Image (cartoon, rainbow, N blue to C red; front, side, top):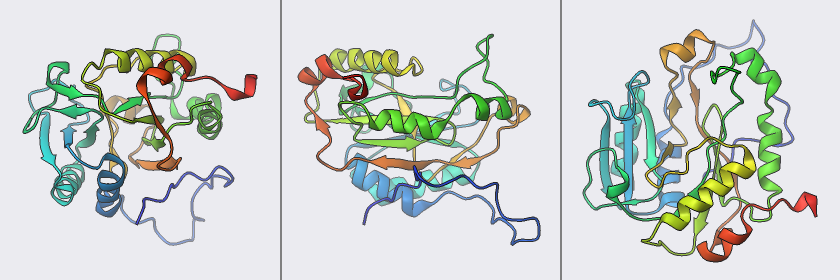
Length: 254
């Protein structure tokens, strides 16, 4: 069983059910999708983190857990944390065994993915635009199409509920991860992505709710479920050295 991408490039986005239609059920984490993602896309050496929406990543209340190969236990923990209003993330790269806190770079044992984090454009003061302006100024569908036109297509892409998080699976897990950070920087520069190159990066878990902070709610953001947007298949896997010279090149410009 695999997690089906929910972002259809050819579907029009609907405004929702008609006023006299059935009520929308309450938003809830999808434990099945969480478990499938951890099993089929992360696989092993699982480390996850939960953070209160209005707390910083370094807040004392931030919780980290190492689950190793225990996919079911990790999915249950994430679903419970998320249902309680906490945002849930997976640690992209491999942490020290048994680490039960948010990782720092010193806790990363090896790399396993290159990644980027693409959010809607920000305003002149560096602040996120309100929801109406963002919807007019940034086309998530077009951004996904652009990602899939890269010479080295991402292994998979997560729709975080706000932006897109493409990941490139590596053939092996290099312990010298500075090369991977350099690849991440190159990806971000090419794509105009956020400066999120760090090897201890946390990314959103598909199947969990993206709970906006109070500031974001004031700008019109609402809770939304993170989903898998695209899966390029198991053949989309890259050797770090050669990839660093090629990634990401845009085949449409050839």
